[in-house]
Length: 112
Length: 112
Figure 1: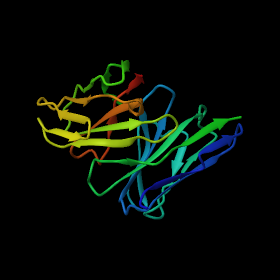
Figure 2 (figure 1 turned 90 degrees about the horizontal axis):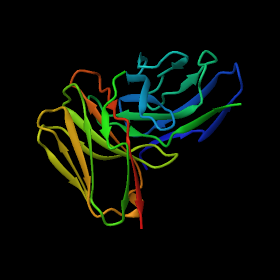
Figure 3 (figure 1 turned 30 degrees about the horizontal axis):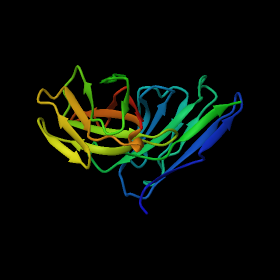
């Protein structure tokens, strides 16, 4: 089945630790996105990539980093510089210049 | 970053009732999307709208692209318990690299 997978479903981070969230898609989509969602709020864009080896900051990029070495994969690293990392992280993808984005199931990150 | 205003923020309705919600923006969009999110899951695309005045249905759901390009509406007819969730609107401009702006969400609860 075609779709977007995110792993793990739940992730725990200790203070001062970097963690990486995985996002893979087999939809042959060109563009991929990372969003953060806090309780009771909408989605805020962290980073996006329209093509392999290129990515741009979104509205809340501080404390996060990404890479896009393969079309299918867009991992997000939550660094120790992100002081409030506890949130629900969503990955999405879209085809070419289409505005229609499709989402993965999400990863919930908790700080111990 | 900008967020769209969705109304109402939450609604509590009885099974079988019709539901209406809307989304407004201070800026013009040329794409409107409606998503539904279940607790702990990623948003699922319900309807995509690409032309001002467009009216599109998906089963019991009907969405309209406002003629001013600054608003959109979603109606659910004959609600059922599985309609429970959070409904998000999202808008996009041409030339903004496929970036979406999301609404704040409408939480729908359905009672028997």
